[in-house]
Length: 310
Image (tube, rainbow, N blue to C red; front, side, top):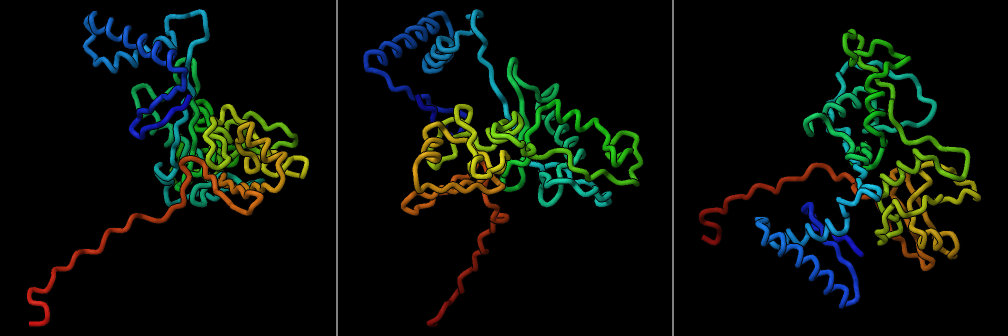
């Protein structure tokens, strides 16, 4: 069974079946669709067939099973948010590298503006689907993932006052002349001193990778293993910068096959070199190398009215 996105919000669901079963399924969907058409449903017959397929597969009337729900991930680019005022208060030195956007940390002011933008998307604010969950993935201009947070996490950050800078100028009733706090509030999950990744690391890496990262593989990240690119037994840290999603097949290939080499950068770009020396690059979906604004074509020059020879 394969899902093929069409790039316009639609997709094809392709299922390989024995011919008799395929004909029986198609006739079943068609029969329900034509019955709905005869009952007065004005929708096109193709749309009715799809509706029959969805109803028979998801069975919304069957309350004896767990309901089918969704996990929603919203990708937000911090550069699209309003920049802080020119007058800023310097942040104290951070004990470890923090997620930064164009050299600046993700601050409480960014988070407050992000919540404002999310609330403007739909009436009542953007919320998780019924029975599901909602994550906000914060990326930089290249599409590289910098942090992942839930709605409630963002609300806590927006409401919390920085201990180092009480009376932040972005807070209600604060003294604007003091300038906004620039302390980092969101970051990649911290490394853990054990083999098994933390829940925060799993969420971050799955959000970043979305699929198995072996070049050409499209197995879903939710079904993949979180693998240490540099093996834990060889000194590799259990850190987001050393973890990637690999399906079980490619996880075994990397672990047991000889001559394969895997290298992961801090931005999640994975380089895989085969035993024969061929290297393939796997970038996280949405990640790209900025090339600057598009250049306009040069203006056309009018030809001379009487070019030589005269």
